[in-house]
Image (cartoon, rainbow, N blue to C red; front, side, top):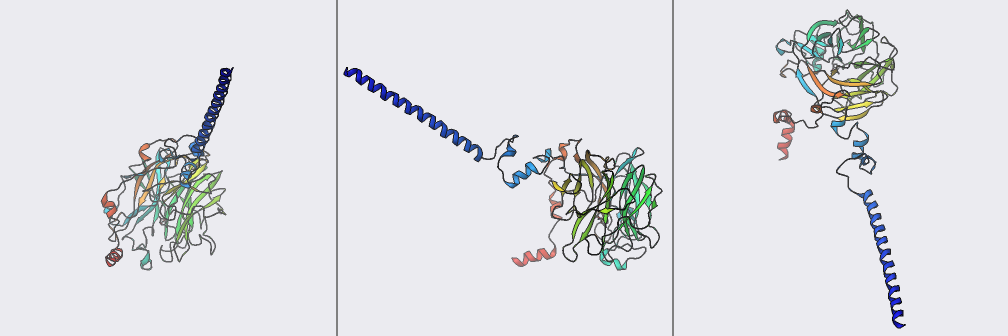
Length: 432
Ligand code: AAL
């Protein structure tokens, strides 16, 4: 009897023990699960990026990579590219003595089985004397590299060797818009006709600034003859407005069945001059052009060079401003965001844009064009510019990994060529 009672007691104890053990195991696994869940939220950024990664909590910098760019890596970003350069064949520069200059190429179009480009052409008895000496300029002596110029054009079968065809737009007689110089042109094709928009100077650049409005000539053929429209086709802004003195680099595209002309101006003088981009829209090439109420639409960039991309437009934003050396995108053609940051961008590029005038809602991008180098002389009074070719991969139809690297190492000489000025050197010497 006593034994039986003892056995029963032991059994009870064992049951309690087992139950406690089970309870403990359940509890521990609960705690472990809880810790695991906590770990998932607080864990370090993963080594392998998956679809879920973008949903985790991140620093602003990492968030930008997922949200602001077309891909998290430059290789996946259709609006990222390096730029490669090739010297052109076929254009003569008079031994590079500064008397012949070619600069500010237009976008390139393909017509009659060949590529066409228009550009600022200067052929003067002497090189430019510089904007600071503009008052010494004459009918024969240019102030700047774009003073006393005409608009010339060249054609090419391959984009590498160019055949100069001669003048497209001459300077009109005084006092018409552009009598002093016509420069910095770009092309529009609209309903089978061609339109060249350009800067029309009425005084030597540098006399009071780099002041000019936009002039225009039209033709039935890219080979001309060109007929100039009288007066300005896009007027400078009213007094006190940001573009009151100049509208530079007019750059036409077709969007929503209208002519969109992007341009740039400089303002905030005296002080740190701000160069920004504007937009003017018209129902047809003759205008009237209405400036966009949100102008300026680009806060940086000296050059004006854009191309349709997907449903929006992309801009190469180069020298000048907080956002120089970026490629930007505006889905609505007005509100630009940075799509990539790059380097060694072409200066004043004129890209080959096959869908510039097709009113596309599916822009395919660009892979090459012409740009200029303004310091082609040796710096001893022979200033002139030359045209060169750039290649890139900003196209949805190309996948050139050779253009997507993000490192560009230049030779030491290149860096040392950017040496300190005498003033800066003296400052260092005085500090020591
Ligand atoms: C260029 C352009 C305009 C300026 C001058 C010639 O790069 O911005 O054309 O007027 O410089």
